[in-house]
Structure formats: structure tokens, C-alpha cells
Amino acid sequence: MQIAHSLDHGKLVPDDIIFGLLSKRLEDGYSRGQTGFILDGFPRTRIQAEILDHIAHVDLVLNFKFRRGLNEKESRNSKFNAYQEYILMTSSRTTKQLEDDHDQSHAKECNLLEDYYRKQKKLLNFEVAK
Image 1 (tube, one colour):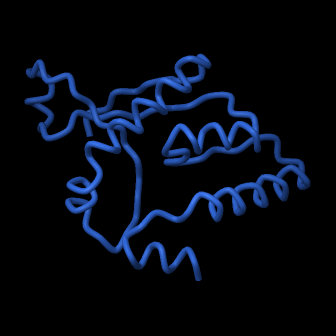
Image 2: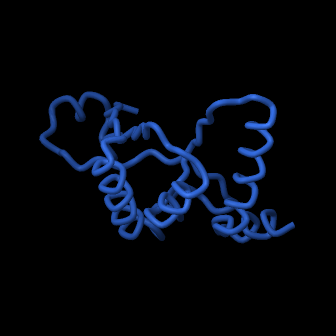
């Protein structure tokens, strides 16, 4: 119910709920003999990454970046070097609203998160057109 409430109001699910679910899922997987996992779009912040390091061992972080606001031809010919991290989010709010509300703070959080994993030599960047 807490997850549905957050999503219905266009908010992210609170960290304590996410980490509770993640811990349970990892424990269940390890008890069934699973030796690894893949997370998509998580962690979103450096604090989440630090907490995740206490729950599980992270080997590698794949960072998909795309050029924002340019079509494919413009992307090839432009000197525009600002990239936006790709994070898949679902919400009752529109993508445009999410972009408007979170662009600046999201960019800062992405930089902190990238720096965190870069210093650990776990970050692998991929630049994609779309």
C-alpha cells in the first residue's frame, strides 16, 4: 500500500521500503543458489549506493547516457557535450513534469553517484543515440 501511495502521488518509493524489499529478494536468491543480480535504475543517489554497499557486493555499474534534445543527425554534427543519464521511472506524472521538477537536482545526484563508482573503478559508461 505504501508503494502504491507513493506512485499514485508521483513520488519515488521511500528508501527504507526499497532496501527492505531488496534485502529480502537478495536473501531469497542466495538461498536458492543465485550468485548475482542486476538492478535497473537503482541506486539513484550516492547515499543509496553507500547503503547498497552494506547489503551486497557491487561488481560493475553500467551507465547509459544519451544526448538530450537532439535528433540523430544533430547529435552526430553537434559539439553539444551535455549528456543525461538514462533512468527508467514510472509515475502517474508525465515525463515532462518529471524533467521540469528534477533536472537540476537529478544532474547533481547523477554526478555524485558517477563519482562514487568511478573512484571505486566500477563505472562503465555507454553513450547512446536514443
